[in-house]
Length: 52
Image 1 (tube, helix red, strand yellow):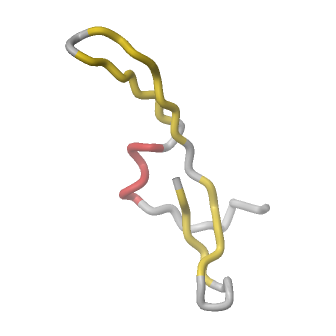
Image 2 (cartoon, one colour; image 1 turned 90 degrees about the vertical axis):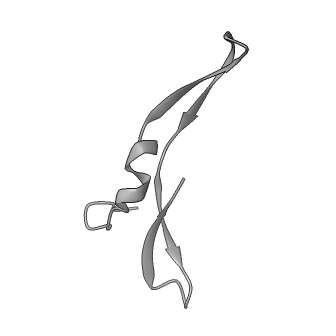
């Protein structure tokens, strides 16, 4: 899918190629990675959007 002309949602910028550390009571329990992908949305899949 060609992403060059896809609009970017600025509210999702914090999640672009993100890596988050998960901890409980100061002890690391794991990591979470996030990415943003283009998608088509209704009506009729004409609108371009992004999803996490």
